[in-house]
Amino acid sequence: MAARSGEKPKERLPHAQRWPTGWLALVGLALGALAGQVGGLLPVGAAGGLALGVGLDSLLNDWLNDVR
Image (cartoon, rainbow, N blue to C red):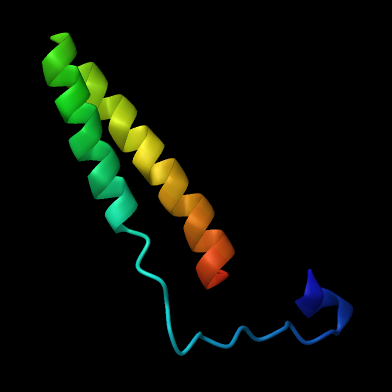
């Protein structure tokens, strides 16, 4: 939309230091798989843990690293 209106799009400068938030997805998967193993429903627990981990990873990546 900015290209049509004649405005220059804002440039995003990369951060010198990025926070590693991807580990949350792995931790969520591992914890979900562990909970699923204990509960007897490994696929359901792993899927739930992965969804939680990816959701937290996405939120923190947006907040800490300004990635949208």
